[in-house]
Length: 489
Image (tube, rainbow, N blue to C red; front, side, top):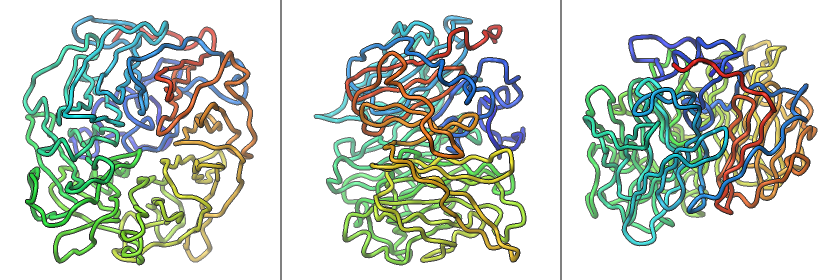
């Protein structure tokens, strides 16, 4: 998959993204993979020509197929061209995990279910997490309801028992939930946890599994001085769940040494006690070191009013030329504020560069884009509208976000492809012109639209848009005759 702005990965494993080397070198005419939520570990949600869909042909998108799953999938699909492993050279496959803990391998061309992998939990447990693909290993990592992440052969769904896998991610499965997407980058698998319906006690944490040998480390958002999975009562504090749609986000700039970020929810902020509730937290690539933090100055109000900062995750902006802070990110929250922060120095308490009040809580993951003129854009889906911002930098190097347009279109986490912004909402799947916000395509005119949505968001790859909904259905809208099939790898 050609990514919008990620630099070529280093081969020493620090800034390399597992399974991404082949994709970055691929010709735009070749079919591509969609290995992770938002298309890449930086959660940029921004593709170049490899999507095959642009303003010139988007009207040709038609419903190809729709299938019913065993349970609704409150997650995002993945796609892999020609999975290796048990069945060499199988045509492209789509992968999705439903809320009941069943993962599926699906023929992308027909919608036929090739395999199912079921997990079970204790009581009425669910997951909203999206798995992640490792094309180099021919594997897909999927969330389970059994407090484990499982490694499966992508072609057959057979479980692969290798060092570190299945990977235990919680000791209190009645309380802790896999809500956010899994991430593979830097030679590691990253998994974040939250809580079930905010019922204490639980502690949000990040599990980092080194793929080479299965070595596992844990960062706890509360009691961060304890580096193991926690049982009941081990930490006197509770909550600070990590539950955003983006989960663990990887810094794509080589100068940041593979740093990863998570945003935490309601919980105590007390660094003297190693507690980091309602904070944006940066960790070293191996997950062992707390590298930096940002916490809104009104963190006490946020925690007391159930206004989780971690209702969304950070969006990495492309480097901004002539800025005193060239490496920036945006971070929202349930308080309805969008923060612009400096990734090189997050600033601690109240250290943001800019605060933008919004009419609603931020519950989606923003998408970013650099247009042909070099402008950096941020797109934000909200419950009643989509907002677009660009980055403006003064002659003194001070960067700020400026609003460009507001479209009266609801949307979950957007995806940008060739100047189009794709969004899903209840009974609606649309594409907007990224420059103007005008609707240029709607599933209502493409053979039938989707049902209700919660966290679901689309993927756009190989001339096709895939999305699931609350009716336990998975949809594929495609261009006829696309993609051109590349030889089996």
